[in-house]
Amino acid sequence: MNKDLVVRKVEEYSKGSVSLFDGGHDWWHLHRVRNIALNIQSAEGYGDGFLIEISALLHDIDDKKFRNGSASCAEEKISSLLKELNVDENIISEVVFINKNISFSSKTQPSCKSTELMIVQDADRLDAIGAIGVARAFNYGGFINNPVYDPSGQFPSTVGHFYDKLLKLKGLINTETGRRLANERHEYLEAFLRQFYIEWEFAMQR
Image (cartoon, rainbow, N blue to C red; front, side, top):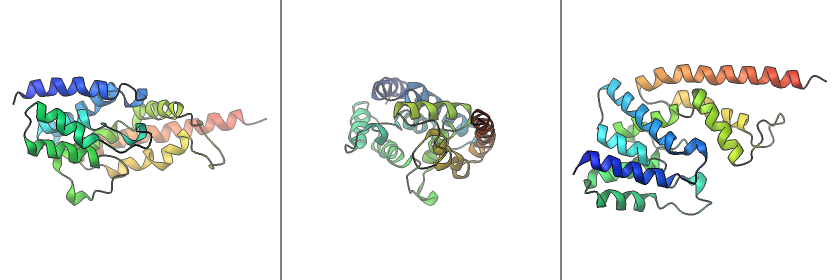
């Protein structure tokens, strides 16, 4: 197995797989998650770098947000791709496992997480917070036509998404390096919301 070739082919496949997703879940998201994950792996000093890299690139295959209610074919797609590239079955199984269990809604217990899942999951969560996380949140909110903010709290909004998910991510980080990176990004979310409410309230004063 030529690992460099596998990575190049996985990159090509991944670019095509997210071509119809919104701009916050595009190729650049996959690229960032891959690089963040490899940085975490290097800092922590453990984990299989090859497995981490291809899992990061394939983590959004058949993302349920873009399936319009249809069943996931992620396992079949990932397995078929990697088998064609002569990737070992054990690695394929782990990539599929990471794809299935990386999301915020996953109920996978920490004791069941592999080292590689913990690292890729941290990278994905880090890309959802901080300045890029804010940009991605509003990009996706516009993509699904959510309002920016609903003061009544009765309807889904992008600001509401901060409380439903983004502000919770810091407490769900698996690695020490990830937690260090998450602290600064979480503070940015809080600062953004403070400024948002100042501007919102100012504009309402008539």
